[in-house]
Amino acid sequence: MTNLEARPQEQVCVAEPGTAAVELIEPRDVPLGGPRAMTVRRTLPSRQRSLIGAFCFADHYGPDDIATSGGMDVAPHPHTGLQTVTWLFTGKVLHQDALGSVQTIEPGQLNLMTAGHGVCHSEEATLARFPTQGRLHGVQLWTALPDAHRDGERAFEHVAEVPAFDVDGASVRVFMGTLGGATSPARAYTPLVAAQLDIPARTTVHLPVDPGFEHGVLVDDGDLTVAGTAVPPAWLAYLAPGTGTLVLESGDAPVRAVLIGGVPFGEQVLMWWNFVTRTHEEIVQARAQWQAAIAGEADGVARFGRVSGYDGGPLPAPELPNVRLKPRER
View (cartoon, rainbow, N blue to C red):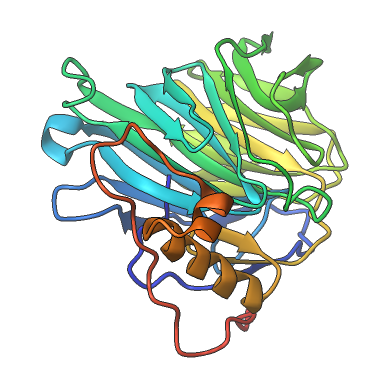
């Protein structure tokens, strides 16, 4: 998914020390397009925290009736220096990219695109693509690639079935990294984890986790308490490294949540629009080359490629601000 904010703010993502307490991150609503377009709830990056492990972006959307909202219709757009992680609860999304990938994703499956030096893709979940689809509901995550891999080759993976296990009556599906002895086949470039947690009502779960990781728990639905702190639906709970067990308690309704985490990311990254880089100059160059790709110029197409199966033109980049992109005061 793209960041469709008309005036995207630069975000310098750095691993910041946490505390032993649970830190709550409130979502903000971000509309993806015009008046009938879907709205996502974004918790990363936030003013409080820009990274959890390598995860630098978290959008949570739905459940939306696509007949009312129009669904997801994101024209071809570029990415650099990151992986896009798509995970659904309800509905279908068609992914197409410059590698020639054409892949429909359904709940319980993973779509993972590695941008490397540059790639473009489109995402569609509309009645035109899926006439019988009713609702769309899921999350889109980005991970920042480390220096050793951020200018590497583009790649795409689809995992049709992810590993799962049960703990204290809860079901855990691991779609990135390793958790509870289950390891996703998807490629990760830093030690990290992402998993869906389904917890029955009035249940206490002692979830074993890597004590070297920081973690975030994004609540999709239900009443959840994380390490003694109540977390409202759509909010993200952050926990610093140091604990080997997450204590999760559900209320009177079942809970669905997404766990993300990883070792604190040791590199400062600069993120603007759909580009994860290190410097202002790299963002300026990426934007210029994407605009060149839209115009059909060879150097731009060589970097980002083309999506051939989308009915419509690519998404132009927003204008850069008239100031040098730099860290914001926190």
